[in-house]
Length: 139
Image (cartoon, rainbow, N blue to C red):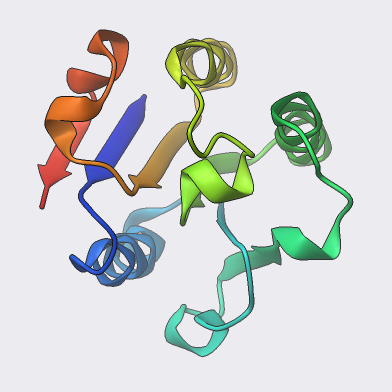
């Protein structure tokens, strides 16, 4: 399953994403991972959420990002939920079409039973059709 929190920069998406990750800990039977472009929000997350600072890794393209996500999935059979803060930035998709990324994540989600929660800094109406049905919060 893919869930999207959409809205322009500064609308409060990160706060909602952090709350969702922290709430998920209460009912999670598996691992929860939170990917961000820095460690700025590390102390706002429950200690059971694994924080990954994506800027610590040499990811310079969407394909490298997808490989990175696949590596996380392959090493953790208990992976239950993955939260992406600033998805367009960390996936190297700013100003680029995201249709393929949504399809790729949907396939990984279906195959491995993982929920992906994405924070995307665009208005909901600007998202591609294959992403609109996944919007859970539009700010």
